Image (cartoon, rainbow, N blue to C red; front, top):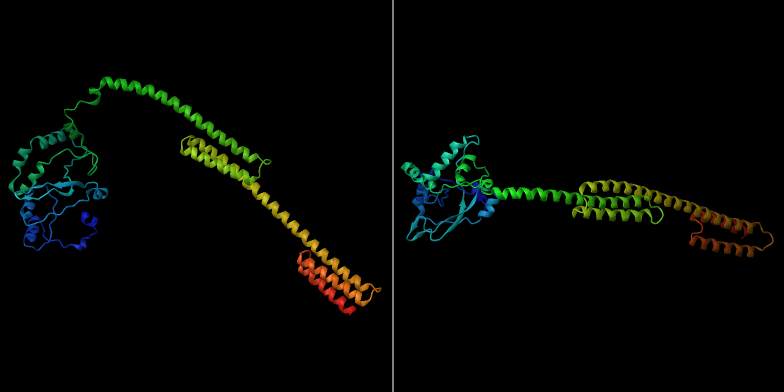
Length: 362
């Protein structure tokens, strides 16, 4: 089902027949089943029984399946393994294989496991003959006994007793290369001391580089003359990005970068406060200017109102000249309104005074 799911099928796509190998084969032979799926060793009798009436289908995505199920391996059904003339199969067929693995408890006696491993590998013919006929299908497995994979498959480690058998004739590396090992140890010690010296020198360089960044951050925090706080903040962020790149390229150490980062955060907080203070001062200055402008516009309107009443009190001019002067004052006030030198509210007050005086003169 794991292989079927890989190709997009689910268990509901199949009807399974047979309670065991024999009844499943019988259902296939009677054409009650359309396909048979085996996980068997090459040459298995159950497969041989139906191979002549069958067509073998390849399973050729072993690597893809192995990413999901590490125990799966790429396998091949060799040409002619079931019949030689004509060959069955007629060519090598890719397939999926899994290894049957003999397991033992990790605490099993090492010598016992070594003896069992020895029997399995060195007395295969005797083992095959000892298997009864009713279990003949198992004999094919005897020929494929081999050392388990240490990296793929189940991932279960090989028992030390089995390793002792597989490497029984192999001298230890130290025994085989004693002179070279002694020389290598000496070289390693020398190289190690050089590496430590170089590492200390490099760390010192990295610390010096970080100290420079810290000094720059402090200077930017204290600088209130040559640049604005916004300019200093921009420069501080640029220095931070440069230090981050140096960290990625291992030109400064992580510890030194953490120290610089604390200085950066402190300097940025100071600059942020200064920027906020400057903006607040600018806002207060703007409000003050607006108030002054408002006062000036009111004073301008009061001036025009005073001029209107001055005309009203002047008894020496004729009504016609008085109306002309009133119209001139209205034109000047209207222009100041357009130029925003008086407010609309003040202009309305002036208009009321203008109308009153004009009506009186008329």
